[in-house]
Length: 289
Image (cartoon, rainbow, N blue to C red; front, side, top):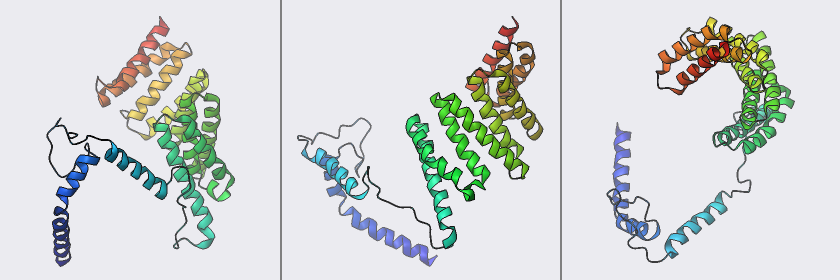
């Protein structure tokens, strides 16, 4: 309790010192950064630039910030290094560093993907994956490797390079199947690879192969999950869609109806997932004629 009281006293002392400068800080905001919230309270829509008659202060602050950034953390230079800590044994440091480096690069790639910058995301993954594949120590963590390979495959799929995506998803499936044999991977993780590869095959027009993969995913998910689980509805929907594409709409109707019922139950009638299931079911009926 004494420690918290002492901390509160230090806070109050620091706050008192800051209050002596608040008027000065507000004046700086008014002339240099009028749109920034200072210590004064402004009403919504109130003008804050009535003291700006010249651009010198406003532009000067931005240029100073830019120069400060370029001096401390330059955009186009290597300004930091990742190193392993002293708690990691020396003989394991190279491996630990490789894992951290690859995780950082792939995290950046995921961010680029979210920004729809697929080219930059692919470049980052192309830097990371060869290192992961070549290292026997990293290869031993097959699930970790499968995760990164599958993520790269999804970026290729969304960017339109479907053949490359199939190759990588097949590779990821191989890693997960190996891990499953070693009891390191659950069947649900396998179903993820079945679904991702099946979706890519369908985009290529290989509907027979897509149906086979989605059916395998459905079998696993029905066995492992509650029937009204969203992943079950996903596999039902994909199977129905593949069947209607193969001209077997009659077989797809029952699967599509189950998917519609589950998605309405989970998401409600105004959700895009429910609308998509209705669309697939309608395609099945259209196939029948």
